[in-house]
Length: 266
Ligand SMILES: Cc1cc2nc3c(=O)[nH]c(=O)nc-3n(C[C@H](O)[C@H](O)[C@H](O)COP(=O)(O)OP(=O)(O)OC[C@H]3O[C@@H](n4cnc5c(N)ncnc54)[C@H](O)[C@@H]3O)c2cc1C
Image (cartoon, rainbow, N blue to C red; front, side, top):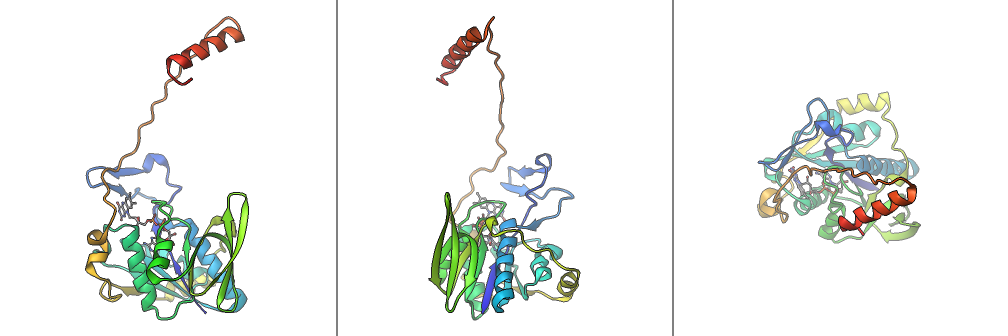
């Protein structure tokens, strides 16, 4: 069984707000000085889901990551957890893309891997939180998808999942190949072992460019992007405090009601 896990490197979501800076002219987030990037947390859960299937049934787990300035120690983390192969999509032509171009490039890379039974993604990436790439990959490959999921089990030619819904979960079976996006309810991802870290350090990732995956230039990067980012800014929140006054609680409550009415809150 061949499992592909899509893993994105993102700025650390635990970055202190004071270090979060944007370049509002270039409309981009500036990397926080001294805070290394991480694998998007839901993607670590997706790696864990793949490894649980590998433990139970045996499987080859291939990780694909597309990005700029990828930090090797970061993107190699799935290998140190137990994944078998790492493919990096690196090319200037991929830059400036959106959910569609990301899904397109990943789907082309997945096709190039040859055989794929199950594709696992995070439910959403921790930086832009769009939650579209996994479903986009399924659409482009013409295969079923289920999102967001807390348990995945591989059966013969089918995958059985527990899909998270507001008041519990649904049990769904879909034929493979399929895309499943993984949520944190799956449970804690495993730690990398020392042996795994050393093996990962020795493994060389495969690097593919847009040409290697046969991507059409008009469907990747800026050229293929369907989202136009008009303005990126940090919202300014103003907090004003007005005290309710009165000799008694009743008077203060009446004063509060009048002030709320004047402010058109009630
Ligand atoms: C408003 C806006 C502004 C943007 N600005 C910038 C910008 O300034 N600079 C910039 O570089 N990009 C920018 N992007 C693009 C953005 O980084 C994403 O590539 C794209 O929008 C996909 O959305 P997402 O990352 O939230 O993915 P989601 O759809 O939330 O991701 C779901 C899952 O898909 C997989 N996945 C997603 N991306 C990758 C990847 N690259 N490699 C492997 N797996 C992946 C992961 O499994 C992930 O958990 C912007 C997007 C938006 C919507």
